Image (cartoon, rainbow, N blue to C red; front, side, top):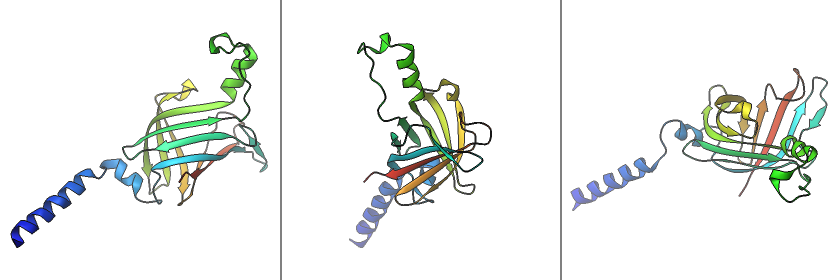
Length: 173
């Protein structure tokens, strides 16, 4: 009886271990209190050399990023109050409507890896609204606590050579 209980306990432990994420996904759940889950955008700014801030998507940006336990992510950032297309057809927008759409959104998805030693996250971008990022790795310093994560973008695509991007997320519960 004792032997059968010991075998049962071992099988239970092996089953539980097999269900845990492996490789880099396991590291993503450990250290830094874990990034896995859904996060709501709080701010996305460029900080200029003089310390002033530029709200890239307005004072109340909207967005969501999701990190899963298998190492995949999906990120969406949008300006609040983007204009609607007058024709109600995205294939019939005006130049101004297209410009507002492109400048008012930033979406990408792919895989991610965390380097706990260097406190960086690497986003391998598979698809993006800014096509220049596709098939590239974005390596950003980051911090994460129980309820907040902050990414620092060392070389943002706008703002000049001395700008630093900051993206702050709040954990959704």
